[in-house]
Length: 120
Image (cartoon, rainbow, N blue to C red; front, side, top):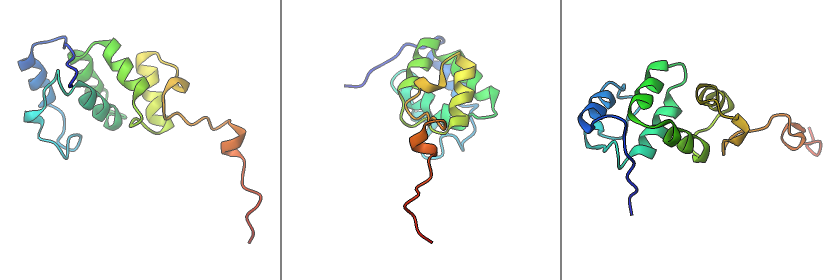
């Protein structure tokens, strides 16, 4: 069953705001058929993945969705990847980057340790 989430503005205003998003963000989807309520997770996740360096894209989702929903999507998505992306999102929403599903702790000795079994 699809989970619907309430939005902070009218549906027509949300659709108008989504129309401002560059087509490259939703390259594989017709934005006109997206429902701001029904597709909220998809919309927030996609914008977060593509919004690095674009305050305007974050401002759009901030105008449409509650901070609680945005934080929930950010912290529970396995599609938000890359420490730089995660740091930007964490800084914007005052979250701990280590709480994100795809955060890679580069200080972890298992990750940063080189494989000494390789031969030349």
